[in-house]
Image (tube, rainbow, N blue to C red):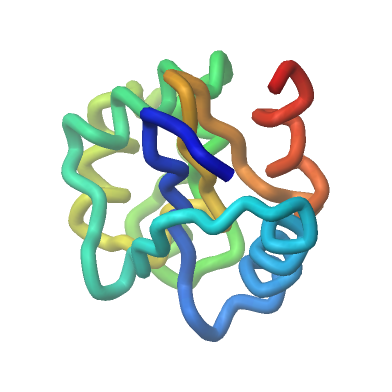
Length: 122
């Protein structure tokens, strides 16, 4: 797929949902730039940008099943977006994955088929 804007695929190498989403993209001829969030964590400012691109709340980028989620008390509904973003930046395992960014839009690939929604209009 040729595109002026890169297709960024934020993932974790051992994540089965990431592997499934990547396979779907490749079946469509889309070869994204792979960014392992455990090796290259997202900054707080980038997480804010990506959250805005999803059109959803910051909390939708948060993995609630991680030990750090409970340990840091992130289920507390009184925590604001800044607190959540700072926690995700400091603990990359808290960032939901796979996370696809393309053309000024972003989507969490859960289920993996959701990554294809960024290409529906292409």
